[in-house]
Image 1 (cartoon, one colour):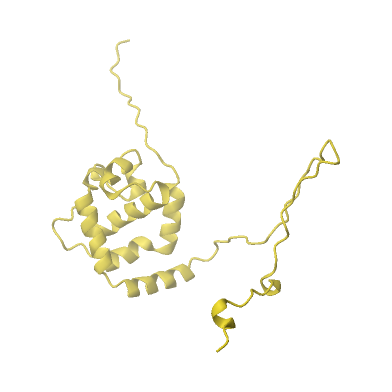
Image 2 (cartoon, one colour; image 1 turned 180 degrees about the horizontal axis):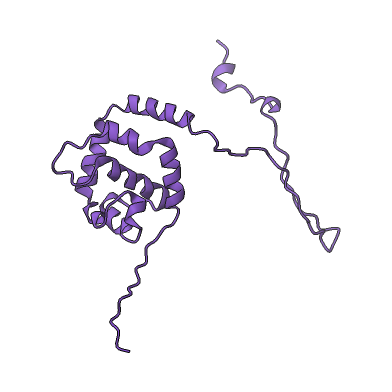
Length: 173
């Protein structure tokens, strides 16, 4: 019964990346970044659109500094970050900084217009905004003489009392 250990356990973190990736895919963020951030520099071993995608994921999830992106990305499944196996080590502050400088130099007005058009096509994402009245059981105080203080009702902007005129406007000449 001497069998070699052929199984190995590898743990990778998913977190909210599948949800973030779904929204980015519906917005066409990767294609938009690839069209405005071409890969022309030989020093960039990582595609600029991929690096910016990792920065977006970092900003949404963890907000780690740029110099710690490699450490932040290490526990995640590389495919969820758009990285190939072993590319998480390429996420250093120099490479990501060059990519962010390219993003700054890109034609952001056209990029935002492309994003606006893409976001109009997203459709189907609903955010309910109906206000609901809070309800629930509020216990009465044991002693009726003890009353709970309540805040004053909010005053409408139209019915606020007028301020007295300032000293500068009340001077007589």
